[in-house]
Amino acid sequence: MKFILGLFVVIALFAVGYLKFNQGLTVSTVTSILLDQSSKGISQITSSIYSNTDTTDLILSNNSIRSLPSQIGNMSKVVIFKIDHNLLQGSLAAEIRQMSQLKVLDASYNNMTGVPAEIGQLTKLQTLNLSNNNISSLPNELSNLKNNLKTLNLTGNPLSQLQISNLKASLPKTKIIY
Image 1 (cartoon, rainbow, N blue to C red):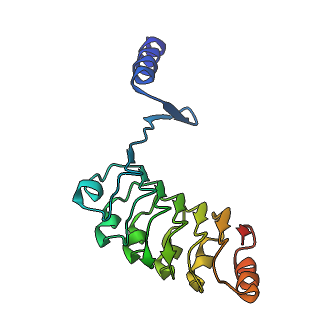
Image 2: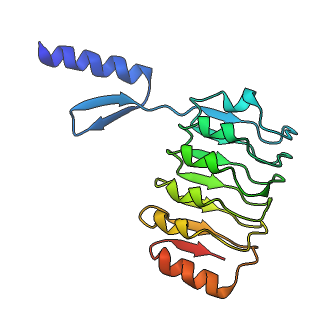
């Protein structure tokens, strides 16, 4: 009887979505919620975007966005955040630290000149693309990412060879592209 009941539960959950088994003890559904606003002519991120707090994949590529509002931190479930090919200036908002599930951050092809120290709090970050900006220095807190950061792309930024060498020493397991 337990077998039949268990089989029924598995079949019912399978019909709902993707199943993830953890040592055969727990079953949970895994879903991604994509918010793709790429190439929409957006110049600022408004509540129509950051109020979508269940979003896991946030794509804002190819727009005219100049800055991130502090409310971007409300999107704490985002795993993939692409804000490449925009007009971002200065640095990312410090509240990006609240996007604690972030694994991929692509802020390439902008006009950024810096990176907030809070980036070091994104301990799940695996891929960070900051290529083709105007970043001339990086925070020491990047070294906090040494356990999970697999790829860091810094191509096209005015960083010195000494800065790259120091970064390689602080992130020994990370592939650094420059």
